[in-house]
Length: 315
Image 1 (cartoon, rainbow, N blue to C red):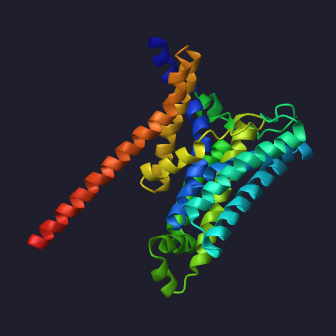
Image 2 (cartoon, rainbow, N blue to C red; image 1 turned 90 degrees about the vertical axis):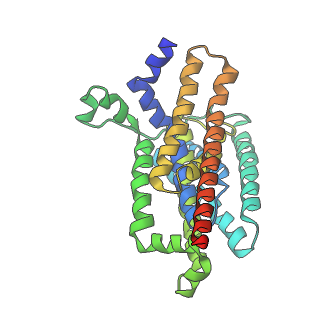
């Protein structure tokens, strides 16, 4: 127990939390933009998976991590636009269309990897590139803070900077305000001249971009290869972070950090010879507990609103 506590309260563990949070935070921010635009993106898992696969394969073909990143992002945006087309143009149910994309992504990535490598498991036999790690001058020499903040992968910094960028976009720009207006009341937004469909396309495209960055991080930052279904439910955990965070960028980041800490803890406990089955349960149990807490809080708020309404009627 003492050894476990020493690990948890160390700079190494906190740095690991930031690394593990990255592929949850990026798709969570993407899902938040889509949610506020009125088009829930349940396809985050599939978008991350296709972006992770495309990034590795293009980096292998070109021996350029930047072209791999660009290809992964382009594939993620494309998948999001496919979802937008089926939902907004063909009027397909957005949840069913997203589930279809998730299933397609899981099967197609395995098929493509098998065609190119003869291996259905991973691309570990290929020499792929990795996004750079950034050492920050001066900060890296500060005790405790240096090992946490400096030396992270470039996409980890992008993830946390994206929190501020998404907040500015949603609450300080004309496009962001229009997007939220569409999410709140599409008919009212249309009545004042806002192009509802264009705003929802924008919301899903941005969602795909951010989710794709999370996928590329998994295969070109966290590790240096693509593995079958390597997202491992992170897209769905990201969806939970959106609602647990109160549908705000800062709240979503805090919720993602909680889930990231749970996953990092499971890795550390695995190193301390805790039973593997218990370790693997930790991130998913944390997600379930968080959703239960969120549901109870929402129920209490609804009861409080109903009580106030009745009191207002009585007076």
